[in-house]
Image (cartoon, rainbow, N blue to C red; front, side, top):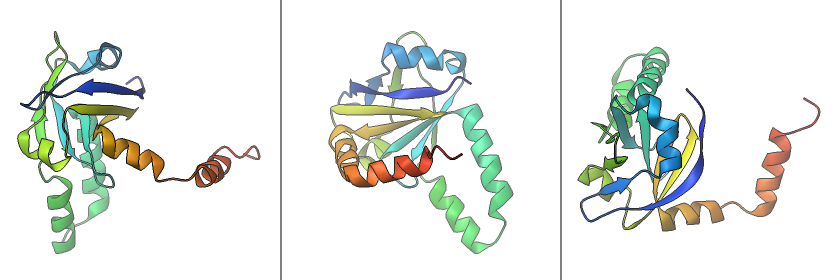
Length: 152
């Protein structure tokens, strides 16, 4: 899969439908005839949209590393809470976000689609901006130095 990246703004209607912007839709073309999986994010107050084939790889990793037992069962329950398989209309690029997930993420009219490698985060615009503002410039620069250290 081609890495998908970029921030895209769009609007949601009252029924929870969004139109994927053309530039992003074009990156998803190899998967448009397949299902997608939409779920609650683990570490952020947003939703994640995965091509199902890529989400299947995530689930294989979870099952391999998760082990068994009550604690893992509860983790798996939380990890898959609200998960739905959804289509994206190949012609229009329209995605219907299930109502419970739409409400969970606090999505209203203004939406940010934040494409990261093999998934797309779906954010309420104000929450997205708040998360961006939550890291100071100094902390951002320090982390960037650690990641892009010239010694490696």
